[in-house]
Amino acid sequence: MARKITTVGFDADDTLWHNERYFQMTQSYFAELLSDYTEADTLMSRLVAAEKRNLGHYGFGVKGFTLSMIETALDVTDRRVPGAVIEQILEAGREMLAHPVDLLPHAREAVESAARTHRILLITKGDLLDQERKLAQSGLGDLFDAVEIVSDKNPGVYRSIFDRHGHSAICGVMVGNSVKSDILPMIEAGGYGIHVPHDVTWELEHAETPCDHDRFRSLPDLGGLAKVLETLR
Image (tube, rainbow, N blue to C red; front, side, top):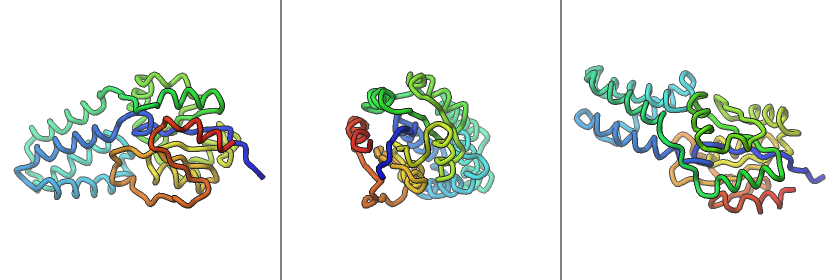
């Protein structure tokens, strides 16, 4: 029996607005700060390992990333990193938390169009205050029927959110740039996943794309979302 799609969830970072590029810029600055102690490739490998270890403690977002940079700086310098470098790392983190919100192409029109035909949700990971700030500055906040800022995205989280704000996950669609967080768990929850890849994806968000799955769709950008949603009705 055909399912009526009633609810569309949107990821935020690197789906509606740029985010990862600020992390990449800060990582380059971090490599410059520690260039006297280690090669950039080694530093980045240590940083990714620290981020992976710390996800369960700090969660996703700039604050956890900043703490992982400090931990990595201590690690690669055998605890001899100058206080001035720690101060610069902290300032870099503060700058990331203040960066302007730059919407991706077609983001506003895609959200406005979906809002005319479906209930729409914003479902994003990360630090609560930072995500609230970005949503407010984006100018998109009033368009969403509900906003969920979660510590992680998995099938249970999607089932719970779509049960509360939609009819169920099987009547829902998730739109996002991360196959690992936005697409695979939503499909496992019973809904559709629409992948809109971004030029830069965090290493820990990489996963194999389920190209042959009947509930998987892919778009080069958000400009074609309305037409895809029409085919899922």
